[in-house]
Amino acid sequence: MLNNFIAFIDAGGPVMYPLTVIGILIFVLGIYQIVWLAAWTLRSDLYSCAGAPMWAKKAIALARHQTGFSGLTILESIELCFSRMEDCLTRRVPAMRFLAQISTLMGFLGTVTGMVRVFNTVAKLGTVTPADLAGGIHEALFTTVYGLILAIIAWGFTYCIEALSRRHLRHLELLVINELEKTTLPVSTGAFDAPQSEK
Figure 1 (spheres, rainbow, N blue to C red):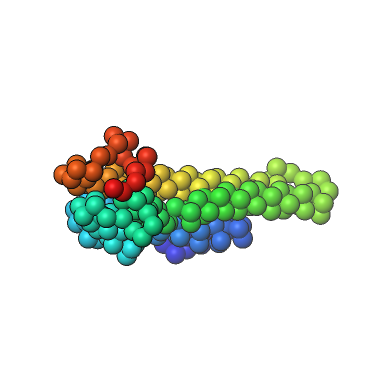
Figure 2 (tube, helix red, strand yellow):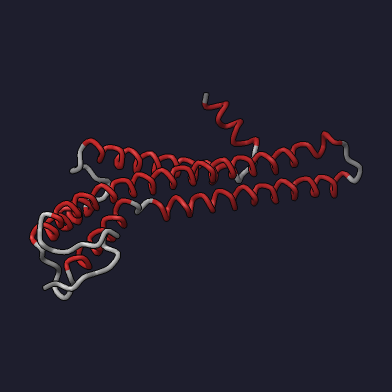
């Protein structure tokens, strides 16, 4: 098994090593975040970000007690809680996007190094056969495909993380709206899209 993995890495040249490290990071970060976001559906006290439950509880408490943070209205305070909670739930997204871009660039770097190998072979031998060029061309195409596949996987993880985060934020939004509707505070149907002044 180890020999097969080494042969797989060697097939794409030296660029395959950092690409493989990037691939491992993509899978670890993506699966970790998705598992924790999915677990929140069953248990709301489980978060991948320690600050998320605090901000969720604060948003509900603000709606229930009709109070805002110092210098802010109730709805502005609730929007602030939502913003901080969203930052917690999607904190892996920038890293996933960065890894997607890096894997694409590393794949293209492998293309360039493979073509350099091809031209180096031509320069050394003068007259070459297709077999002489096959190794460099294979390396160039192999790393490109590998990098693009990793980028697609990273973007897929990014979409799943953002979709789960939006789902949880919408659920919390409904809870906050229900708390506000129990009071005499007027609330627009746009869900916090127009901050109102406290009376």
